[in-house]
Image (cartoon, rainbow, N blue to C red):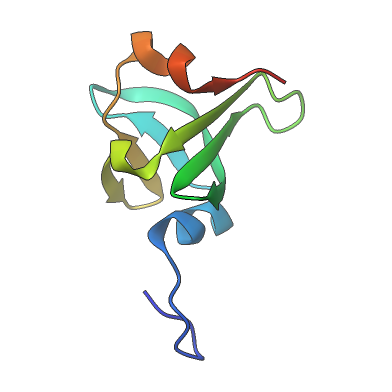
Length: 87
């Protein structure tokens, strides 16, 4: 993906700009938050924009699929704690 000046834009940045939903591939009904940023090959995902109930830093290597306004993560619900940032 490229912008009008031919600068590369990563998929992570694109989905962060659009605040895409992050969902677990194993349970496509389970949204864990919104993609807020991309930093050093990781996606910053925040659950609860106002209260920030959970914040996750998930490596892009764990992305199973970039879909229409959704990012599907190849991690289990049990392993979410591994990626959680304590705020």
